[in-house]
Image (cartoon, rainbow, N blue to C red; front, side, top):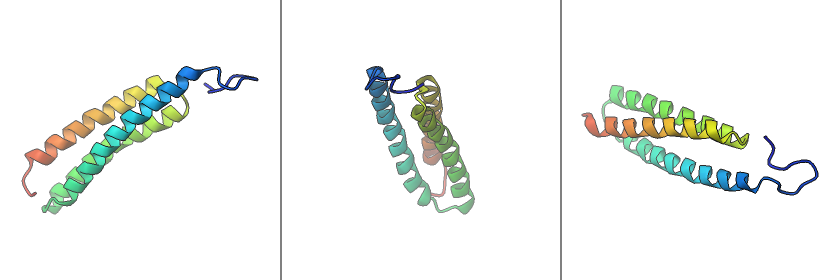
Length: 102
């Protein structure tokens, strides 16, 4: 899973494109998680804020895993982990909007 083959400068140029696309998607999810964190910090109820922070960590974990897989050029794993991060982030936003204590 190397980016460069033996004796070549860039024999796998598609990997650069895949990595760039993955990076764009990671930035999108990371931006949404950063925004969610700011909203969570504003929640007045301590127990609810802890619950939301836990959900935030649960959404962050697969994002970190996607980045790690991307660094290894295992894009199929990255996409799966990134999709899970997206789903958990969407659920987090629903939880933030649905609950009392803001």
